[in-house]
Structures are given as structure tokens and as C-alpha cells.
Amino acid sequence: MEYSNGPVCIKDLERIASKVMPSGAWGYYDSGANDEQTKLDNMTAFDKYRLHPRMLRDVSNISTATTILGQPVPTPLGVAPCAMHKLAHADGELATSRAASQHGGVMILSTYSTTSLEKVIAQGNSNMQYWMQLYVYKERSVSEQIVRRAERAGFKALVLTVDAPALGRRLVDARNKFNPPAHLHLENFIDPEIVNNPDGYGADLSKSASETFGATFGANGDQSLSWENGIAWLKSITKLPIIVKGILTAEDTRLAIKYGCAGVIVSNHGGRQLDGTLASIDALPQVVEAAGDKIEVYMDGGIRKGTDIFKALALGARAVFVARPVLWGLAYNGEAGAKHALDLLQSELELTMMLSGTRTIGEIDDSYILEPESRWVQSSVRRQQKKVNQLRAKL
Ligand SMILES: Cc1cc2nc3c(=O)[nH]c(=O)nc-3n(C[C@H](O)[C@H](O)[C@H](O)COP(=O)(O)O)c2cc1C
Ligand SMILES: CCCCC(=O)C(=O)O
Image 1 (tube, rainbow, N blue to C red):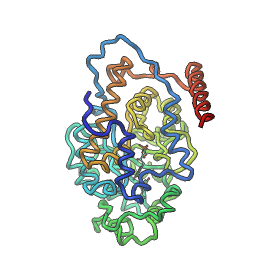
Image 2: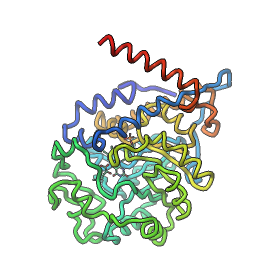
Image 3: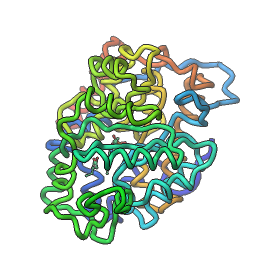
Image 4: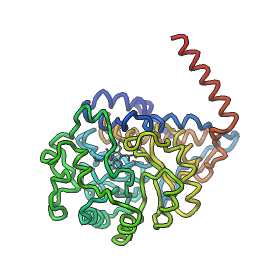
């Protein structure tokens, strides 16, 4: 467990990124949909869950090793798929991939990456699993070719994002009239052999036909997607495990099992899609319960500290993913900055394990957490609220 020099927590990285990034790009990374209730909830919801640590255990050896999809990985902390890392730093996804490789674990690559999937996975090593994130397009052959390329390149799973039949309404982007800079390319679409109209998918963003990036996204996506015509179709064209990203209910978890998915990611897309959903950490328990031991459950959304990771694991997540913290790290200092973000979270997880008397990931269960209903937590939340009110009254 080591803390390197530099910003001392993810919040520091956020502050730095907000200062060094151009306002349009910063707005795009930061924004949630509408009132940003869900974006904010994703973070604050963790506070309701209090830890229930055990003492006097031998914590001289802490291991975060675990397995994901049956493969050993050194950590349950992974990188969530995010579009356009080159908005943060010229080295983009190559830098993120190199940073993640020094950690090991899972990196999910967005279809909307500004570096081709082949180049990104080439930075990996045996400690890494790469998963390819997909959207399904009206022109199914485009999605199918991305699947084929991901298979050939060695991606271990497909992550189908199901919470974005259209892009959420992000007011900051609307006010900024945000469009990515014209010199960026969505490189996964550059190969004209696989796409009839690559620029219509953002291969060359300077030639993007639509007025805004969001409109391009909406125009290509298959809004008629369903479990039957989406998951069953994907299963018919590939043997890679399929993970659905964007699940928030027990009902959809049962359908994911029924349709043969290997896992679900509990996620509300960082609060960027439907505003007003449950925070990811609050939706997690019902999904874990419905999943039983039939499929793996992962989560993303609002993780900013090692204790957040610990709480998600205690509530039954097999792994967690972070998006904005890695982007902020990239904006701060490219590969070293992205690594710094992951280092901070990894070190904080190890410290949390040590201070709570857990030595392995397998030991972390719900006996280490007090649920919000617990009277101990409620009284403590009430006391805090009283303090906040007193402070407010003095202002
Ligand atoms: C700038 C940005 C771009 C994103 N792009 C994608 C994407 O291309 N595909 C996807 O499935 N999710 C995308 N997401 C959602 C993330 O994968 C993830 O669900 C969410 O941001 C996690 O919350 P966090 O940012 O609080 O860690 C994006 C998120 C951000 C912030
Ligand atoms: C427009 C590309 C979609 C990226 C995305 O999923 C997001 O911005 O949240």
C-alpha cells in the first residue's frame, strides 16, 4: 500500500481537471442529465451506509485478488467505458490502457473511443482483461463488425449498454452547444470496409453530418432494441460472454439471466441518462438478490474513495468500475495521471480492508456494513443532519 506524490485524493484530481480542461470538454465529462439529481445521488448515497469494522485480526497481508468471469485478476477495480479520452489528453485511450495495465483488472473500452480497439488492447498484459462496450445500430452489420474485430483482437467480453436508446438531456452540453473538436476521430469507425458511411458515425468528427454529436448518436442507434431482438441476436453472432450495462432493477436482472447474459453492471450511466433513478449503490442490493449465484453483478457510479469500493463489494458487487476519476487523472497528467487515480483508489481500498479487519476480497460481506435502515445509522444520520442545520442557521 503506497501513496505516491501528487494530488492526495480523487477530489483533488477533479479540481485540477476542472481547471486545466477546456470548458466544453469539462462540461461534457462532468455533466449529468437534467437537474443532475442522480449524478449527485450516486456519490452521496454511499454516505448512508456505515462501516461495521472488526479489530485485532492479523492484517499484515492484504490481498485484493479476485476472479472475474472465472479469470484471476489482481483487483476488483476496473475502468468503465467512456467516450473520447482524447478530450482529456492527447494520448487518450492509449494512456489509459497503459495506466490500467500497470494495475491489472478489467478495462472496458467505449465504442466511441478516440483510439482504435486494436491499438488499445495492444497495451495490455496478462493481468488485464479487456471488454468491448457496444451500442447496437440500426445498421446491424456495423455492430457485428465491431464484435468481429473485438473477438479477433482478444477482448474477453462484450458489454452492451442498454440505458441509452437516446442520449440523456445534458443541459450543460446544450448550453455550451458542445461538439467534440474536429481533429478527433472515433477511430473504431474509420475502416470504410465495415461502415458504409464512416463519417456518419463520427470517424471524422469534422465531417459529422448532424448539428450536434448527440444527434449523430441518436440517428444511428437502434431504438427498437429489445431483449429478444438485441440480446438473443448478439448471442447468435458471438460466443463471447455478454454483460448488460445499465441495469437498475431485479426484474431486468431476471431477464438478463433468462436471456443468457454472463453478468450485469448496475449503472445509471453516471447520472447522464435518466435523471431521478436510484443511485447505483442503492439499486445494487435488489440486483444482487435477484442474481443469486447465476450471474456476476458489477456496479459503477459515484465511486470516489476506497470506502466506496468496499461498500459496493460488501453489498455484493463482484467488481466496480470508475469513469470520471480516470478521465480527471488523464487530464491532470496523461498516463501517469490516470495511473495516479487508480493508485489512489487501490491504496484506499487496501487501507479500508486493513482498518476493517478484512484480508481478502472474499471476506468482505454485508456483515461489514450497516444498512440505512439500521437504527444505529439512522441516529447517526439524524445527529449529522442536526449539526448541518445548526451550521446553516449560523451562516
Ligand atoms: C464522459 C463520459 C463518457 C461516457 N461514455 C460512455 C460510453 O461511451 N459508453 C457507456 O456505456 N458509458 C459511458 N459513460 C458512462 C460510464 O461508463 C459510467 O457508467 C459512469 O460514468 C460511472 O460513473 P462515474 O463517472 O461516477 O464513475 C460515460 C461517462 C462519462 C462521464
Ligand atoms: C455520444 C456518445 C455516447 C457517449 C456516452 O455514453 C456518454 O456521453 O455518456
